[in-house]
Length: 342
Image 1 (cartoon, rainbow, N blue to C red):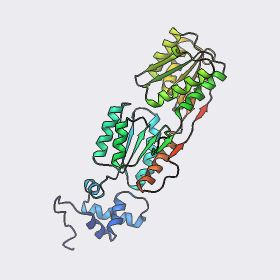
Image 2: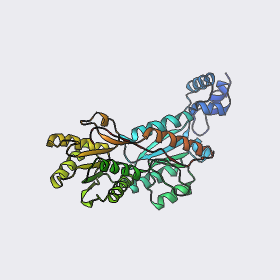
Image 3: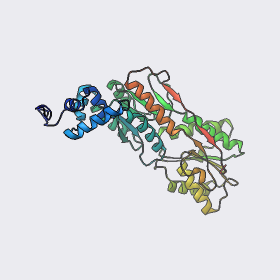
Image 4: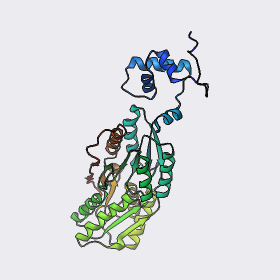
């Protein structure tokens, strides 16, 4: 056996990548690609490199790679909630696109707070990732300047922005609110309420569209807006529906900013004996699991969450490779799914 076969790095005592490559009979670049999980390497090389790494006890030094490239082989993905089912499909799609190319996905939770989001972004940029994906484009001016100064490619998801230099994949939130209002108006509903929680910018944009359409129809009443900063939940939906029925029994249509609020309202309507949709029609948002099986089945706005994640990841992948992005603003639209609740 060659004396160099088990030579360690001088500073750490760990086997080096060059030794793995030599033992596997491949180039250092090929060994690196295998150990980063890049899917384009031939199967026979993959097995040889992995076997050599096991024999030598090689562990990749991520810090050294980051120093060599000035960026880590990671993608930072910031979402406002890890308990919100809306982001499960998004994260799954991002992961499925980027991990085969050797990227590690770092997930941050901003809890719908701009200052917490800014703190997370600052933390990730201290050891710059290869790219970032951010939910929404409602960052503060200071946060936008921080991202721009870093030079780290960034894609915004879940809404649309036409600001210069912004790359985004999503849909027009205000237009979704308009569609909900138009549906209720066409169903003959005259006293339409808007119910929303957590009040992030995307929720408020839905409310803007809903309000604008009701105004155009001469049906807007500002008293019929019920906004809560609390997290959206089934329990909160029960409470808010009961409050509406007690304070405004003439309400005959409700648009809920999230399906879980609508699920709670449907349960509370059953408890109170309020017939849906004969007495009051309900429209939700997102078409979450369970909406098609509620009683009655919930009319809702279906959002392309998985496709948003997939297209955003593909766009960011091109940006990390410095490839042209011919379509920096991708509007995937939405679908009004009409069911029994309206």
